[in-house]
Length: 134
Image (cartoon, rainbow, N blue to C red; front, side, top):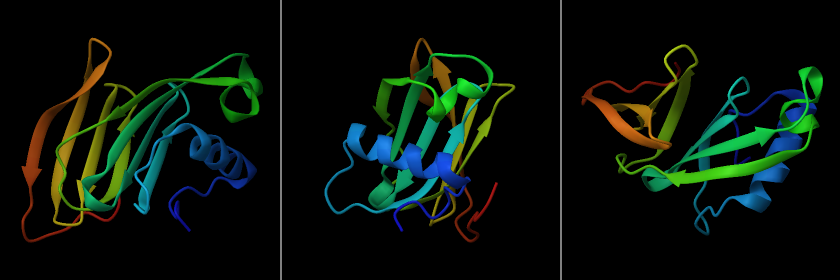
């Protein structure tokens, strides 16, 4: 399927249905990874052709009502430019509020949040090796 990495039971299916309606994924582009930072509401979606989107879900409710089970509003839908090949891996650093992504060529980018927008903080081009999981 389009979101092979997103396997968290029923919540994952509900999130994908919600996101499919709300995100403008270019026609025919397949997603290769999707990572959800449930504590802060961030979602990173990576796909073919270097596609990388970061979304923010603002949730109402507390405890178990937060996240997809509660009511959520999409408050950010930013396309990040930097990868030119399929983004295959993404990981959130909750402590430092950063996102690390890697594409099929081995390019690793660390993204940071600054004044409400995501920017490249660091780039590491592995050239010969490819990151499959973080």
